[in-house]
Length: 124
Image 1: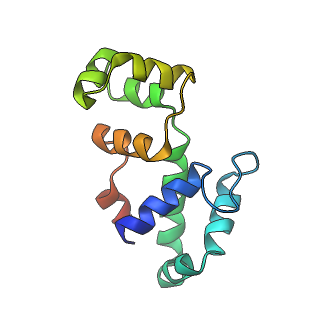
Image 2: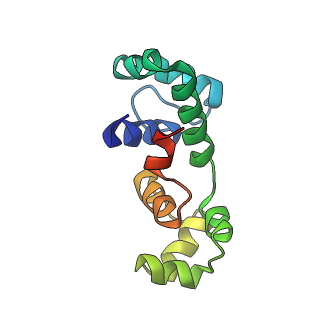
């Protein structure tokens, strides 16, 4: 799996992308939807069990809230804001749902916190 494919799979798991709806998506529907995408079918056919394990992990991680990820990492909002070099208020707004945390920013934060690791995922 390339990093671009990984990024696209994360985007879809977050409910973004063509034909994707956050309302109906669960892990089985996510896997089914991914298997209908032509570029993903090659990954599926190459190693079905591994690809499904990767999809399940991406989906699981996509459902983690920022506040939970921050707490799992043992960081306060202030510590996270310093680590990411963004205002504490921004983190507060994301966690409270007052502003939208874009999926790609969430994924970058999760990578920074060690919750999401492309290399580890590729070795499943």
